[in-house]
Image (cartoon, rainbow, N blue to C red; front, side, top):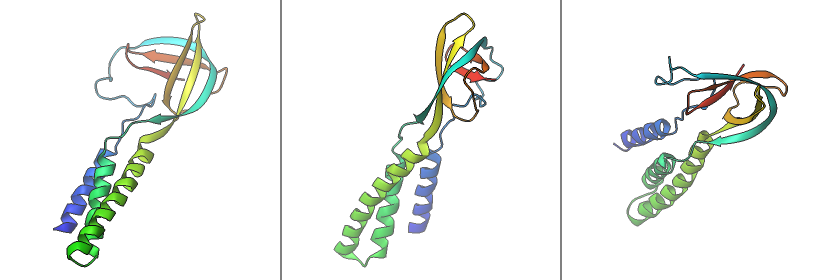
Length: 150
């Protein structure tokens, strides 16, 4: 029973840590076949950034559950097992929170583009496509999201 519970908690932890990309190359179903405005420009600057997807709490809860179960079941019985379970839950919660934060942070780029009309625009997106200063690019906008593409 404890193994089944551990597997269920681990599954919830992994599913909760899945994050949607901020890539110029990934479209969700609602964005497919939607019209976008295209503006042309030249890359003025590029800055490396970290995109933080935020915390859902799943890492903390999953880590606490796994730590409590693992520590509590491995040490005797009674008060010793209870104390070990509490310490294991605290340590597991901290580790689970750190694991979720690590999984939810992605490398990104802040790309500043000078449009053909002279205006400057800065867009932040996943760093999954290389850009160079002076390179001609397209800004694709749907009124809510803007992407820089080649």
